[in-house]
Image (cartoon, rainbow, N blue to C red):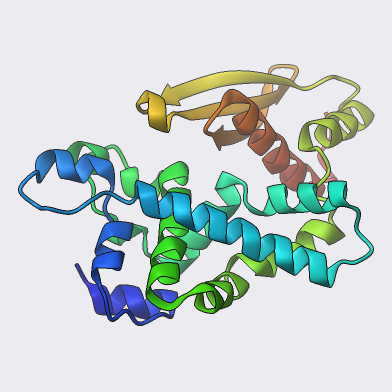
Length: 234
């Protein structure tokens, strides 16, 4: 693995690079390299997810004292949705280092949204074990937390399916519909792709670990697109 490149991109130096090796090892890789006595990144992802939730919750609690518990929960959910986290992994350009099986790689695994989101959380787990909470907080602060102000300013934390329905009904006088277009991955790592449509015209796509999450992601993407193109007429 190109440890120096990874460390430079994420801004953290590791004394124990085994943590990095684990963070960048997908379970499919071990199916083809059973001789390597290492584990996949799922346990680090579990740890990183918990640390990430604490970092974001603490940030919201201290910086937005005017927000009630319900709003804080919604803002946090908008920030940590799969697509949002995956965007940060793409921005860091570290997906290329994710080790996986040849089949997974050939199917575009290093660009799959849910795998990139999992990788981000695995990296946080690795940083936590290597350097502790404050280093994790610094990493999240210079990546994911930059989105909070926009989420609040544009009210992206409001239930996206409700919001996009209001926009489409007001603008086009129709009710949006959702259609499942793809389902892939093993049961423990399912990925659903959904499209949101007005009449028979596709507006946007969304991806998630469940149909509900994929629909919410599609709704958010549709809102963003429609807000950018208010000049569009039916």
